[in-house]
Image (cartoon, rainbow, N blue to C red; front, side, top):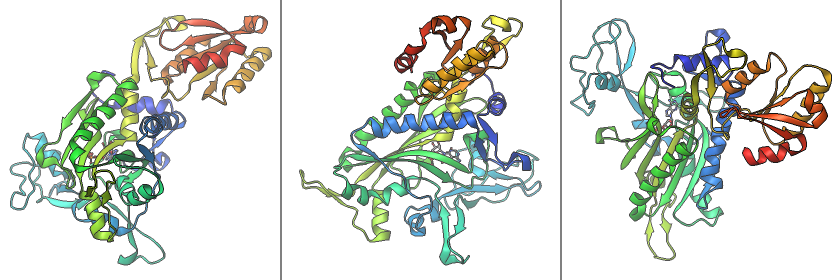
Length: 455
Ligand code: ATP
């Protein structure tokens, strides 16, 4: 998509039922979004493709689904209670709240908030030119209470990242499976951050979904696996069709490194109106996590290698990806406006084709009877029933066939099956390909085979 703002994709996503503003009838809830009928399919397919590459097709990674609510000590051990903060300034005049680091970066100034350096210099409020307050640290964790008493003792947090569920289950997984190092644990789940400046549609929200994998390694091998995982994740985006020119690696500079990270890099996507921004992160977390949990829980987190007789706290290479940022990136990357592709649209100027990878497309096959006449309807509906056990299908009998093809192109459906009057005689249907627009007559009894081969 070539456009310098997200506006087009936001209105497309709403119009075709991919993504809606949350609680819209009440005026919406800032930075919260709901996935509509097509959006939930797309996002599920992305999560499934991730799981397949991460767990199903690897011998050394297993899955996990840990709870969102965790013991509050987890967040002390992880450093989040003290350290998971964003630097915040308020405008003294218009009261608008800003991320101090973003304001400084926009002026080309490297943010440095270490004690004694906590200054915004000449930077003023971008909205009204007012004076800004000193920088304060704002903790991003959502607090809530467990049980009937709303006191300090019952205070817990909504997890701000999914990986802590993996660390605290490291021993459980190790002891219940026959995994030896190196091995990984993967999970997909919701995370919550009370972001100060959410925005850019689903790019930065307060409730989002992460797809994370933690790879436990011998410290001597950490650098090697960091390199392997960074290639593995980048190749995954390529393999599902994101254009190479829209992706890049970016190494974190020292001042950006999170409290746990020894080294870190982002995979960035070129979002319209935003430029290259983080889509995924690959981090070498050293032994920070397991050492801290060992200290706070008293459990021994060390690993004994039976072959080399070495004993150490495993180091962790983390791959952390956002399901929402990925969904947005795949949607943007697939969105294409093309010149009218003929048919009854010759008067129209542009058509949208969503060139999603077939595995990600929300609907795989559309079934379109040429007319609403009973025998065609019945035949088309029978075909749908034959196929829907294996693939997401959609039945559409309204409007001209050209218009129906365009509707399907717009939502990325790879194949349309048209049932016409000849079909009643020869028991063949026309299968049309979204990208080539080639049409092929296929015997109805061959359809399942045909799609098994092509989807
Ligand atoms: P950013 O610098 O953009 O705030 P981050 O460095 O805080 O991101 P991580 O903590 O590394 O992000 O989280 C891992 C992944 O989770 C990110 O690469 C992103 O895909 C996703 N993610 C993080 N925060 C959000 C958010 N507020 N909304 C949507 N996705 C998010």
